[in-house]
Image (cartoon, rainbow, N blue to C red):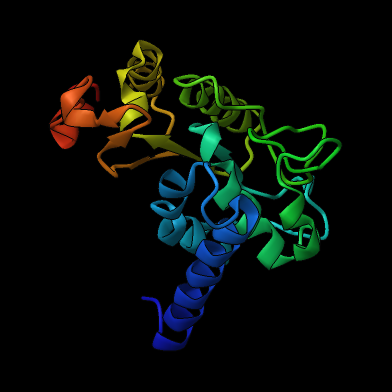
Length: 205
């Protein structure tokens, strides 16, 4: 059970992360603000409370893995990592600039703490299945957390990965769907309606 003090800390972290998103993108500038802010609360819980990780040693073998499958929303992950000390917050305004360590999609070669290059939608859960299964085969207790968007669920590979995870009983994997109801081109219900989500996930095991 989380205590009130820790809950306040998590709420403050999420608020700072949302502020960081606005500062990174710029007021009145185009960018993936909505899809990043909608994930702020649970990303704050994961980085601030739930996951095992070490900002001073991003490749620590005991860490849990975090993948932002909807890679266009990487700026919420950048905000979390900066707030917790993976790199200075002074780097945040360099988002998407030439030579910056913070590109529009996650890049394992540029940003410490990134586990996989993502953003080609639908692939993150498959990558996460591979990571989680490898950790289990190595008899390691680490977990893998994968964040997907509800608009991303139109990609068939997501459901192949879900079936694979169920078939192989990969119990060290947690998939989190950010159900904000929106895709880039409009509401999910008006595009490729992925609802109802709980029933679909249960059906795939």
